[in-house]
Image (cartoon, rainbow, N blue to C red; front, side, top):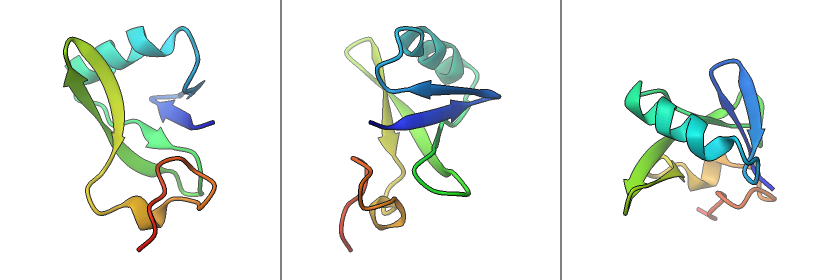
Length: 74
């Protein structure tokens, strides 16, 4: 399961508070950080059909931990 930092808070991807926090972060242009590694990796928030979804930054899949769902082999 992925974990994200948004501001000072850390959220699991299934946290019921995350959708509202993503909407707020999107409006403020905040970047969530994936906590699969230290230091955390920047992500971005996409708005798709009115939903806010966390996506990995382009070409950053190889930087994530291999156990992270955002990982993509080089």
